[in-house]
Amino acid sequence: MNLPDSDRARDAGARAKALNKLTGGQDTSLYPKAITHAGMGGKFAPNGDVLSFPGNTFLCHIDPTSDFYDALCTVQDKLRAHPNGDHFTFLPKPSFHMTIFCGVSGTPLGSDGWPQGFPLGSSLDEITNAFDERLVDTNLSTEFSVLPDNLFLPTSVSMRAATNQDETRLRELRMKLEKLTGLYRGDVESYGFHVSMAYVVKWLNEDAAADMLQECESLFEKNFAQCGAFRVNTVEFCSFNNMHKFDNVRSF
Image 1 (tube, rainbow, N blue to C red):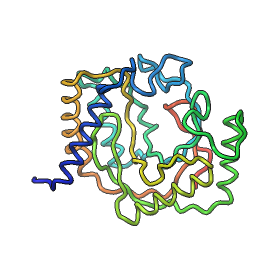
Image 2 (cartoon, helix red, strand yellow; image 1 turned 90 degrees about the vertical axis):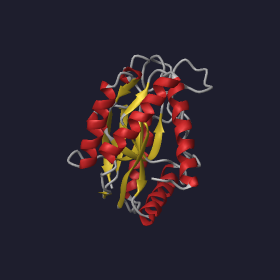
Image 3 (tube, rainbow, N blue to C red; image 1 turned 30 degrees about the vertical axis):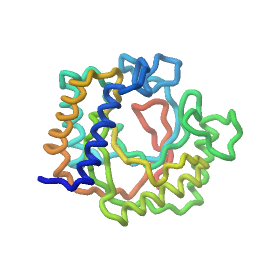
Image 4 (tube, rainbow, N blue to C red; image 1 turned 120 degrees about the vertical axis):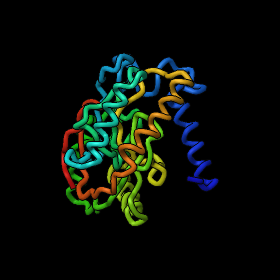
């Protein structure tokens, strides 16, 4: 299939970005982002062990009875069995979700942004309870449809709104959650929706990264390309202690 020049340029740009994320590119860090030794603020240790990284978030878990969930499980298993699968730490299947809006999180808390109106030093429980109380008095429309868009990285499936109307609903929901939380990151319109399956824990060399991206293209065509759009009617406000489990505080 001959792609328009704009699509070829987009794919080439995405591929280059993906290669940098797998190899580190010009990054001189010893480990990929989010990978540190215990007590140094990361989500996972270099050996793949999950670390304490508490916070709250707004998300929708993937329906375990859906074709999309089955595809996620199949692809994750194949990536785990890949010769370079030891470069990743894989997330528990029941944790599969699509984030709608990131709350406050980190060690120390707020390392990825602090909500306006809360004194520095506020605890996670205080912030979570305040967000929950605000949700009671807020009317939020949470009905939209999404579908898998690509697998440019072995760590996550990029998602897109099924229609222009769904895209508008998603962005408007993010804007309302930004105001509700006081977390202004400037990415309401630009945030890329995705479903994570793994994290990179050690850099790949260029040949291994290129091979992995080729494998991703094949896995997407075989497993995700035929998945239709799925409807989301409920969003969950969740708290968490680490990246392996997200506990529902309130559904809306």
